[in-house]
Length: 166
Image (cartoon, rainbow, N blue to C red; front, side):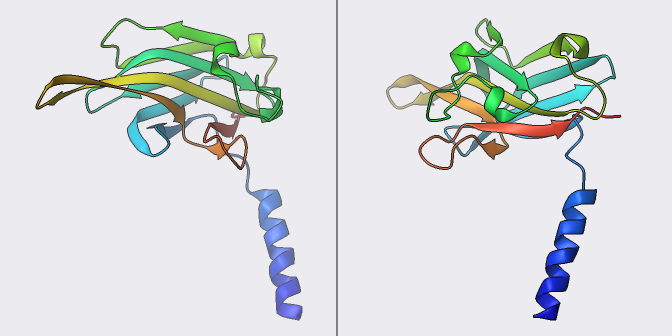
């Protein structure tokens, strides 16, 4: 019992001293829940927050949607908590074949400063042309920057939790 209490106390101490990930981070861009089609790279230069979507292996971006908030509950969502990319503040349609796109947003516009926690919902509509026996097939999927689930059941949408670097 004493060992369990010591482990619990140590766990609490570790949780309080391990900070959130820095805003300078890279996560997978996952389509159809598990298919790695690229990455989402988030950087902060102290003035601007930049979120770059990059696809690979023949996948391209059709649209990108981005929401940034201090807490994931502030990201546009349904009553059940599922995010609604069409209501995200930043959205862009892309020409066919685009494999990279970057949003650069001034921290001042977001009301954020060094040390603030942030949640980033990075969504994309992606496609890939695949040659098959009957010609070219167009695969289309929704993709999310890999992170924490918005809801535990039903929807696989995710958000990235990090912190503006000091």
